[in-house]
Length: 130
Image (cartoon, rainbow, N blue to C red; front, top):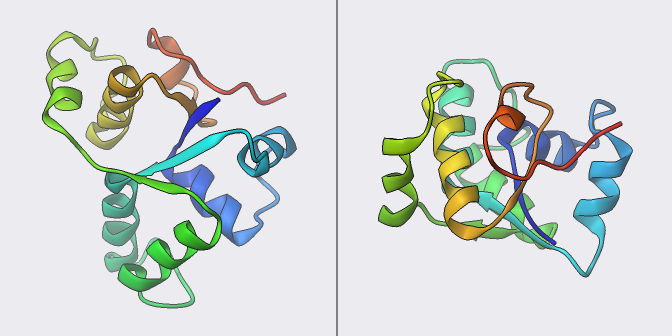
């Protein structure tokens, strides 16, 4: 399984937050799965840190990549082919960062791990949490 972590899922995973569904934790840890974090999620986290909405134990520009590597999560760059999917993406979700994650999932054939209720409305695979 090729999995793309939504920003909140990554943050919950690295901080052992109880809000992370156990099925997500187990899927992320499973060695047969390829797990990715978009550079867009780092962008979101750094912005939230800068405006005081995301406390972190260290500066985000070092802490987040270190945690990603520590947990064997691959970085996913933003590419032109992914961005081109914005043209045909319905305006269900207004958050531009989430829309880009959806585009990346489409372009790279990834399953998104998220608890965002709007993302499953798109024609993509979403990891189920129950």
